Image (spheres, rainbow, N blue to C red):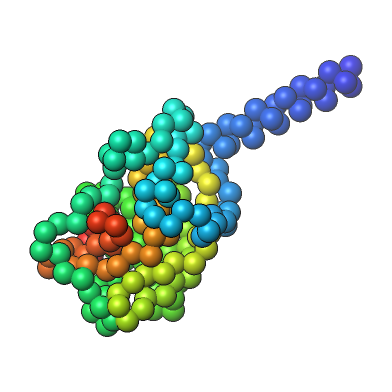
Length: 181
């Protein structure tokens, strides 16, 4: 009798843990290694959807990243720092937000997971992000792909560009993550 009760409780505990993971009870401060591919293509190819197993950037199609618009101007030093000041949201998807603190701490929400990392901004306008501490929620495939693209851009040592009066972009290898205040 006791054995049957223990088995039932063990099965119920396992089911509850599985359900918690499915609905997004993430693990805070899980580390994403900063060592890995040196380019945006490599990072985005590493991303995959837990639902369908599809790799993002398949055949060069991105969900969130765009080609760098013509006429975009690179920003350096103080101009880049001023452009990144305050909370920024991804253009076209207000659920994605980044905040580059004056203290050298990046905080972000990529539409699925929250994260943080130390960062530096050099005089040439290049953002260098340290190891990402990111929660590990499971989200729908499109959101996961956007999440992977945001993290890939942050790890690619992007440059800061001015697109227009209200839009700045993090840019690496001709791809841009456009941000608005």
